[in-house]
Image (tube, rainbow, N blue to C red; front, side, top):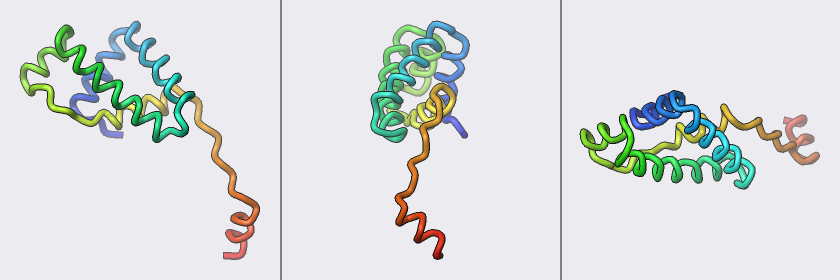
Length: 108
């Protein structure tokens, strides 16, 4: 999975700060539990990550430097949210097909 520069900056920052990592691991797990599916969880996390980037941009390096250099243009953080869902949550069980779908697949 490829991360854009902002996602990579957030990923590196969180990896280097254990308290931030614990915070995000708990957030990711809570989003995965409360969302209807992984898609919905990723959307929720992506919004929260952008709020985090905005907040950190006023107080923490390297966010502050990046904001000074590039400005705070809204950037997708979807790949990072999906990556963290894969890394920090157990896989969801696959939904089984109905008996009629299984039958149709055997015929084809």
